[in-house]
Image (cartoon, rainbow, N blue to C red):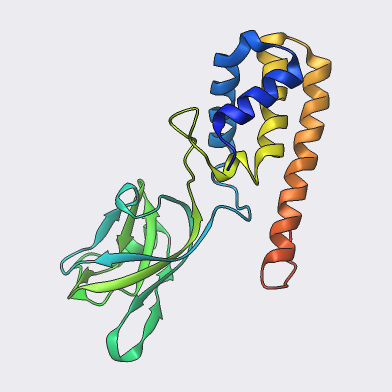
Length: 206
């Protein structure tokens, strides 16, 4: 698996600027942060197990097994009824229905203030399954690997060079060229996502 150091060296070689290693590494992390909420083939999570204990009505996203930047679906095991989908609501709806929060099986949820909020207080322990887009590590060390430096390497490589040309090297023409390359790499990744999702083609946002 490719590492942060591998991508950093590749960009430095592209730019012929070995003196910019610190700036390149920071630009790589900035690029990951910029795209971390986007859905790609390598950052979707399916059936991530989460325990909802009795008396629970909220869960901090940071405490989940994976940090979700987008949640597509939450199901809970209702015992005899099997898996039941929770209905996504907005914060205003959830608050309006909570004048007297009931203790019962949760039926709806929303995300607010980096927290998963439930419409009721769990009346017992529930096993939940979450699907969505998860945050992938930016790599704390140069030797760390990440899907970003493998499947996402062309996108990051282009964005990093665009940022460095614009803000460090000060060559705006080259920055514009690399922005166009970045957009092409973005479209390619989205196309892979579309064609890999169960054989269905779904609209891609450009």
